[in-house]
Image (cartoon, rainbow, N blue to C red; front, side):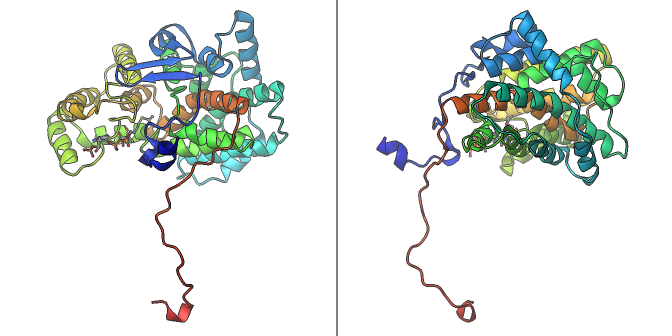
Length: 381
Ligand code: ACO
């Protein structure tokens, strides 16, 4: 115990912050499970709302449970016109993650009753957040172009509806199914930075909209979910396969982090990156290849050759952008799409945290001075 209280580990590396039964990662063997079920099996056989249910309530739903859950989500997809009006005041040049963070927090103004010990409240808040976050992401995309948002369609499933709200066109069935699998892959990942942020916020017993808003803000950073946008920008900068070697050599020489590579836990290729690469190839077979796919494959090969010995391999953000690009999703919506998925994991951890809550209050190692005199302004200098 004393070793734990004394030892400072930057980034809390390797320090357990909770006990959780939601997901499991083995970073040496590239294993990821949600509630004990492998990510490969879920990606092949399930769909996002079923996975969200599994994560949040711990069991795969029966047919009736799933139907009721999907019905509730459909019912709550619309957002209040005041939220849409608020979004109209956001600058068009603002990042969609900032718009999402503000909109998620604003939900708390409209659903302010807080009853954290009431399972009906937990369910209602969970449904609202899962239902409304995609609507808010799509709404900002239209509002920032000066257009009215597209209303959700009750006859469409979760992913088809999101793609419809984004483009006002019904999505191709394969495209919608691949998008949905992408949501499964991004839904949960143990105590990553945004989930930890959600848990810290949850531990104060604040409302779930504040929990999700703080997690959205954390996900936005380039070391976390924001990397997917940076990956595409990097592929565009590299431009062609023959420039990959020079790019990687330069990054290594200048100690620059290459977006989409490396992970605190995985020391092999992220199993989600393996599946996402397969999904990208499936999309390319149907809709034509992407000019940057060969660059990405060559980049992976070069980075692994040079940095594989340090455990640097592609992470979940490396191939996701190529999938989303083929689905005509703008690159600054890649991270908001990640948030649409990860809200399931954040809510699962919120619910779990409430079951054994103790406020997070770590300690620190003070390295400052003591006993310094107060210096009057005129003597400072
Ligand atoms: N490119 C080049 N070198 C890297 C990279 C990278 N992407 N990532 C780590 N390294 C190297 C570091 O330079 C360091 O080398 P050193 O030991 O010789 O100094 C070593 O690997 C360890 O790196 P750390 O930064 O200490 O690893 P940490 O666990 O703190 O960070 C992180 C993990 C933030 C993901 C890091 O790998 C990174 O910045 N990657 C790029 C951004 C990215 O893709 N983020 C998305 C992660 S997945 C997600 O959040 C959804």
